[in-house]
Length: 115
Image (cartoon, rainbow, N blue to C red):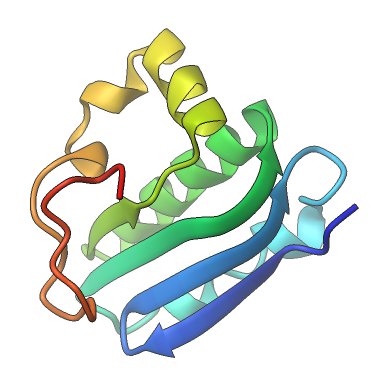
């Protein structure tokens, strides 16, 4: 199991490393949303995610819920194909979190959410 890490690359720009699976996401992961407080725009880069399952999608939905609570704009970058397939099955890929421009705090502009 690859340990799950959330690393702040720059203000509002985070990368996720490890697996987004039932085995790697625990209660502590769900409580680790302190990074969202005080940020207006958030970009979460999933390029370094290994394996994923529906727990990964559930975590992304929780991040969205938390960002809405603090009224922050949230976007995901480099969503793994397996996770995107799960989002597509649920219709979640049609939301604004999977398309559009990246927050201005991201190091590179995201014109295509898939990379």
